[in-house]
Length: 209
Image (tube, rainbow, N blue to C red; front, side, top):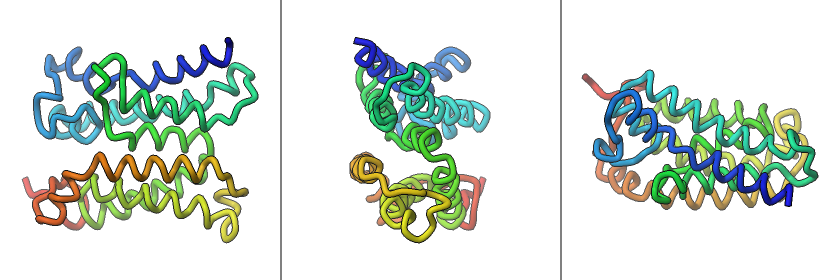
């Protein structure tokens, strides 16, 4: 019963629709009605501005981290990745937002931060490099998801300081999330191919105001 309650708690944490709540409470806007119509971090930056975007990013990241730490906090002997994954499911299918949520990137990153901090910062560095080169959050998100999955296999053998041991569950979850992230970014991929994907005001190809 205790374990079931904690899994429910992880899902409810993931279901907190950060972008929607911040938009409605502080800006009187439903961000799903603007921009890309997404409730995620990128659209929050686009519609509500940088301060709100950073707050939503932090909240979505924290959801994944806190959920992953639940078995430690409640002394449950289950791989914490399961709880992080449930939070990601909550983020993508939130009960508080009609089961229509974000693209899983920030909450997945939060799970990684709690489970393997050095691996998280290693992956974040790659994300920022790709973002700087492309000035596209979508491209950085897709590339990073693939990079994380491959790194989860390779790093334990070539750079164990970052990821000491191979964890099959981590690799399987990373692969599943990569497939989901690519699927959710399918429209972005089409825009990237067409050369008209949205760009941010950062990097070598940044949007000109």
